[in-house]
Image 1 (cartoon, one colour):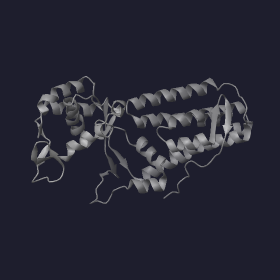
Image 2 (cartoon, one colour):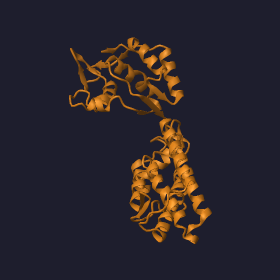
Image 3 (cartoon, rainbow, N blue to C red):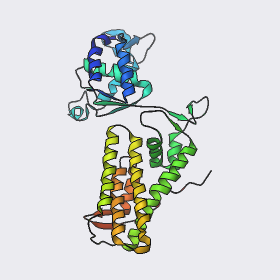
Image 4 (cartoon, rainbow, N blue to C red):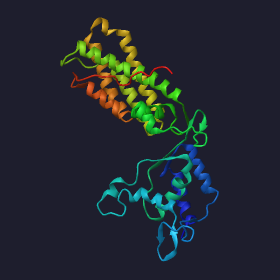
Length: 325
């Protein structure tokens, strides 16, 4: 069973060039265009049954079976109801973003689109290709023994801490390096000392000085800082630059810290300043939600602002500081 790639790829190439099928980053798009331009041969979807006894039989050819990799690609549409009549496929396909690793680019940017086009189906709207994670500068290898167990990492530090490191430390479209030192430095510096201390200060001040009272409209400088951060985050997410989106979030946290340090409401008890800080934290919670959902929920359970009325619920330590190792 042979898939006629040579008939499909000219149309596939034009989809890539026109960004009808958008590939990010640009270097990966150029890589696959170069592959297509160099010329491609037909692709075999089957193997002789004597060599591959398991698998899906080829229709009308009992001596052949369909090879697993093309069946794996087809799972993308079968999983969302391609063969069903319940309307789910139209709801979920085409995918807005298909996320893959760089080592499977050829299958997902050339062969899979060709399969879809041959079946008369829409391509995913975009393909985002990420890099690999190294450990202490070396490729992960069972032989070397430098494998990082994600379950152990999450059990020790928490899901959101692991999410934060991978999203912030590693450029979204490039290779990035993991080490426990880098992880713990980010954890203590950005999460425990940064977000954790910032939110704890605000909740403590709100508990001490604010009740369920209506306070004036937030300061325009604070509102502008929030809106600027929201704009940058949205832009960077659309560009698949998640590390830069999180950098903008932490710039907003830095702004909030400077605002508090400048006005020192713990000395003055100035309710307007404290309310502005609470308002910033409330909006920050929603900006953080796509990146750190569990943390955002904890913040929402601590303090919120509705119609300029502060509601203080409960507080706790978001990220306990790790001891120095």
